[in-house]
Image (tube, rainbow, N blue to C red; front, side):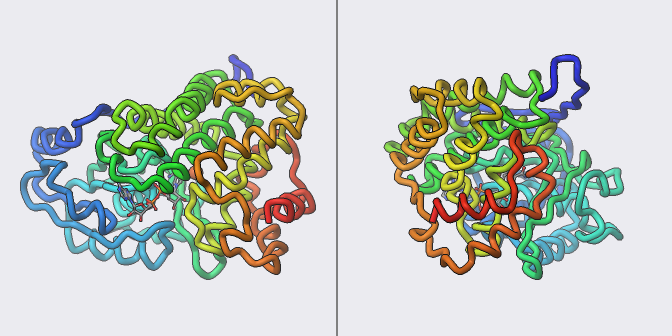
Length: 377
Ligand SMILES: NC(=O)c1ccc[n+]([C@@H]2O[C@H](COP(=O)([O-])OP(=O)(O)OC[C@H]3O[C@@H](n4cnc5c(N)ncnc54)[C@H](O)[C@@H]3O)[C@@H](O)[C@H]2O)c1
Ligand SMILES: [Fe+2]
């Protein structure tokens, strides 16, 4: 793990508006900047309420973002962006909409294709349009980051694009927009936010400058997630989760996730399990597996979640499993419809995600991954 004197680069959106009832600040900001043509990239649910953003001028809406978007969905977004010729692109939705907005902002009207920009720092700048992000789930923290993920249907792998040119000019985080998130999605996305924090905290690249957000984000999820699952209109709990999600986003930039996300991805790409639900199912397994390599930090994580453990692997597993299961999350692969015959292929896919596995505090062999899937089944 890095120490205080290790170099680190931190980036943030130029402006972050946070708080219940702030959604309309986007329109005021855009008007002050003088943007006349805006394209909002959204899913069907959020597209039906873009009025809350109070955007003026010519506003077009792409309303067909699908969860865990694939390259075909991105192609449609790019076609819409080329037609709209907007001065401002707004991602309005969960991580799926925000990630496609990032890619639209750099790829529309550009000679570069998606495949040319996969990986870190491949995008040619400068970006020609302004970019705003308005999250409506509290999970991904994508509003604060420089990554976008799209599934390639040919390989069933997530293509990760990382570029400073995809950083938002403004992020407007209005927890009231998340009141309508159903309890199940609230639970899953909340654990996703926590997983970003925990996997950054126990990461090989963990850094004190990020740890502070990681542990506080974990604490916020421990304090507020069950409350928000019980009562979606609990404004304080929703705000706590929106903040946890943002802090998780701060963790993703310079440190990123590790084994948990690597093992969760094949559930989403191969079996269309929602990103948060996949992470929640995997979370206790990888946290327990990593415990011997990060005992102090694992203890701090469990304390932040409000769970006492003796610090041994079994008690960490039981406490982390209970935390997720009590939120009503399905914790068995078989319960999600994943067939046992696919576990080998899933282990192959997960083992190939080196960009994340190499961050894990303890080496995860293919056999380790396969046996975690077997236990989770
Ligand atoms: N860029 C990053 O750093 C990053 C980090 C983590 C995850 N991701 C990506 O983000 C995606 C997942 O994002 P997500 O978990 O936010 O889910 P999502 O964006 O796929 O949305 C999930 C579902 O919730 C609905 N929804 C969204 N907001 C709602 C609201 N307020 N009320 C009711 N329904 C609402 C959507 O229509 C959708 O059906 C994945 O593709 C994942 O890979 C990106
Ligand atoms: Fe995630």
